[in-house]
Length: 210
Image (cartoon, rainbow, N blue to C red; front, side, top):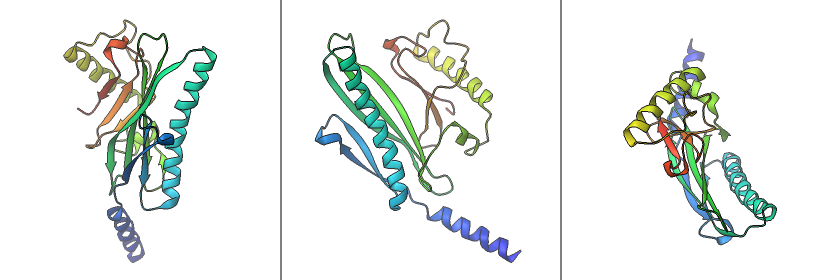
């Protein structure tokens, strides 16, 4: 019993000593339009894991843009990235959520093409947090329930904000690929342009815990 008690006390000490990550802004090759975060947790190995994933996301955007420009023989008129920190929680739940916004504008295009991709990390390990982590944070929710909850909140939001959804958008067939936690540990799902609504509706962010 004493050994178990000491182990529990040690775990609680580790949880209470966890700190929120420090985020610094950086620019790819000095270009102020291409902004990305650099994360520091105080552990060099964890920092390397997290920042490598962020840089991979940035490079995927840049390489994809150059490939499309060459393939379609179109000039890139503008390209930019930015980010927002959704959650930077420490303690019992160690979550860092970063939402990257990526936009590119080709010559001849009617409007820029823009996406939002969410990167969720456990800052005690540096591991990415996918949908399976929703079973470890909160109530251990099944995917079917999440789809139902998201659909309910999407219907409410579209009615409230007068968002036109495509006729085949509902019922939802699956969860969107991108989700993140906000500062209150609410879960948000992100629908990209044209995924469920016209471009004019914008990128649709639904808080299923609102």
